[in-house]
Image (cartoon, rainbow, N blue to C red; front, side, top):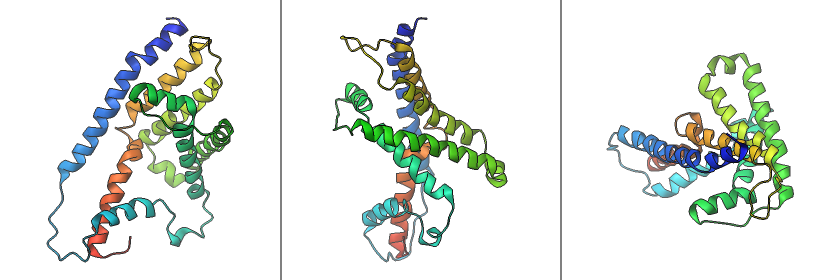
Length: 225
């Protein structure tokens, strides 16, 4: 298979298959959680502003709890670095926006190129630090399993291959002159799509459900969120 054929495969069957698994797997995870149900709470609600509680639960828990704000733990700060960096790269880089536009017709303004370069470096370093912290801490190493390391790998690979494909020269038709780096990058992204619904990376979308439900429950009880 030539590099051009590999790119056609990555842009065609592999892409649509991985997207199908991503969507179906994500819906399956949400449905499985919904099927668990919840016990009926017969207590008198202290508040009925459950939507407000859900939103507070989602956003308030993105911040470090005040009890830990004076901690000098690098892990807490580092998590912000690579999560924010990933968000900038995924949603702000022009080729990624065009990729979404080709699939859905939805588009939005891109961030300047220098912002992407500025975000990529700390994100790569942050992910490497996260891995080294996991490997270097005996407790974290004991608690870590295949899911933790494979989830890290499928997150890191698109970054690594994307940096290899950045500023790829294109022909007048728009096709890349060197299709192999682009094909490898696409395949690494599709591997991420295939794994995301089934591993711990599912928190990328499940976090909003879990924190929202927790916030609504605490709001109903009149407890601090």
